[in-house]
Length: 85
Image (cartoon, rainbow, N blue to C red; front, side, top):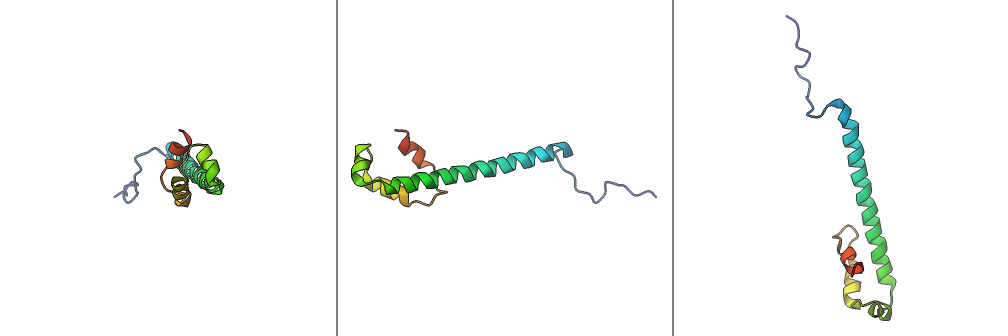
C-alpha cells in the first residue's frame, strides 16, 4: 500500500508563489502604520510647543490643541482634520 504524500500536510489557499507577495504587503502595511504613528507623534509634539498666542493666530483653540497634544501617538487621525482646515 503506497502512502498518500498529501496526508498530514497542511494546504495553503494561496499558491506558493504568492506567499512572498503577501509577506511584502504585510511588511509594507506595518511600515506605513509606523510612519503614520511617528508623523502623528511629531505633529502632537510640535503642536504642544506652540504658545497660546501662536495657536490663536492660526485659528486654534489652545485648550483643544493641548488636549490633542496629550493624546497617545497611535490614537486616531484627528490631527489631519485639525491641520487641514
